[in-house]
Length: 280
Image (cartoon, rainbow, N blue to C red; front, top):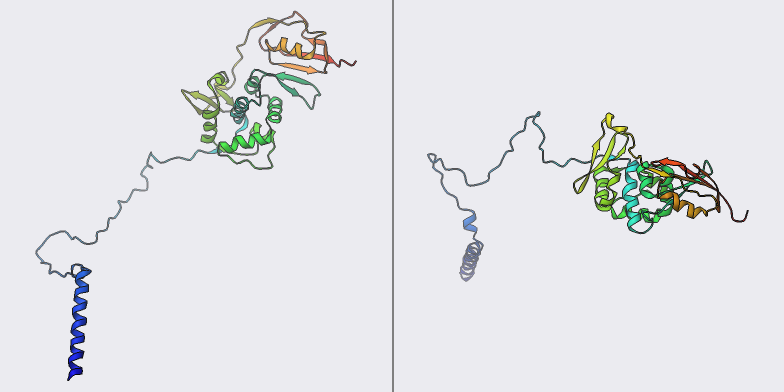
């Protein structure tokens, strides 16, 4: 009899314990069952599912979606921010003359950096690429968030050949590196496209066929100085104040010049200086 009583008391205690646990965990609130009247029109308070509205197939796309800019081979466009970076870092002098050696013809000439950019002088850009160097070019592109392939040489990088960059990245390079004193370069045109300054920003524009070819308007007159018997460096300084189109053959002192001394010149006329070594 005692065993049966003890067993019954045990189960009663367990039942009471379970009731206390359920109250502590608020289980009755979670399992409350109520009778719903068939006549009530109350909206359900349980799970609700929202079905998106279908969009017709011919509906226009939203206008606020970001449209990815196409990647292009940058060509001569990339040279301007690179040269501006080199000038800022002191690698190239803005008003200095870049010595340009013509490998094929065996001659040489000198031009200012901005004139090389304006005229898209490929030999001049190659010479500036050598001055800047591959290490500095990699550093510049890394700061701009662009990784260059190892096999690209410095000349291909400055000429914008053999790799592609998104248009918005090129414009970002212009906005960060090209100062206002380079404004005479713009609009800068390459084939059917140009970059121009619009306020404090740069932008790409398509060039209509009628505007691609435009005549030069430099008609400033000047007199060719006498250069014979002057050192090449001194002769360069005398001519460079009038024109940037200077070709040099030989070295040492000047023995011949074209055009001749005191001849009247106009605009960016081409000058050729022939020199010989001091040892001769």
